[in-house]
Every structure is written in C-alpha cells, then in structure tokens.
Image (cartoon, rainbow, N blue to C red):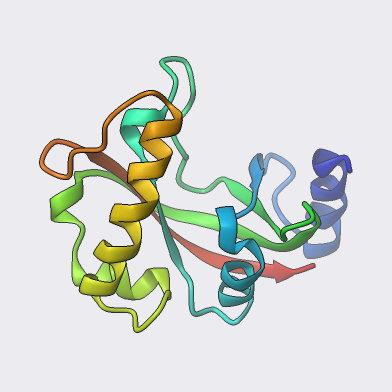
Length: 148
C-alpha cells in the first residue's frame, strides 16, 4: 500500500494543511491490533520508543507531524498527530505517561513490567543490553485525527 498517497487523500478529505507531512506508518509490535484499537477509542494517547536504538541519521518524531497507525496486517486504521516529544531517562517515565499509553490497568507498575520485558528484547535484537538505569526513552503524546 502507498501510505503517502493515502495520506494525500486524507489531507484533502479532512481539510489538513497542504504542507502537512506524513512522518511514519507503523504498528505497535506484537499487540498491533489491540493497541491500534486503544488509539481508535482514544484511550492510548502516548507511546514510547528507545532513544538508544535510533540510528545516527534517523530523525526523531516531530511535533505537528502525522502518523498512520497500522493493524497487524499493515493496514492503516488511524491517523494521529504528534503533540509533544520528550527524551527522558527510562526511570523518569511517570504515572501520567503510563496512564496515557492506555495499556493494562494503566498504572506505572504495569507499564514498567511490560516495557522492561519489551525493551530487553528490543535491545537484544539490536545487539545491545537494556539497562533501566541508563536507557533513554522518546516519549510521544498524540491525538487521534481520524479513524480510517
């Protein structure tokens, strides 16, 4: 699927600014369908990625940019716009961010348990070791623009 072409159609349909940019089209890992539904229901309004795993020339998410959220079959299901981007130490992720991620019981304890396991695996795939004491995270807050 040509995500850029889809975005151009959505810009026109939704009356978005002509200069609006599609930043990315992605799915939320092993729980792609479940987490996409949380975005659609406006429960999930934040996400976290590992700053340490970005490539040197890979751009960080940009405030104001748009992302397509994909289901487990890479079909677009939602359009979001990024409202805030922060880089923080892993251990400084707070209860508000955990709640906004919308997963499980929405507590920081649940978020840490799930994300400890996720980032251990993610870092290992990149040939690195996840250390909660030194890891840096990219925290994004966003809002739902449209269900596709």
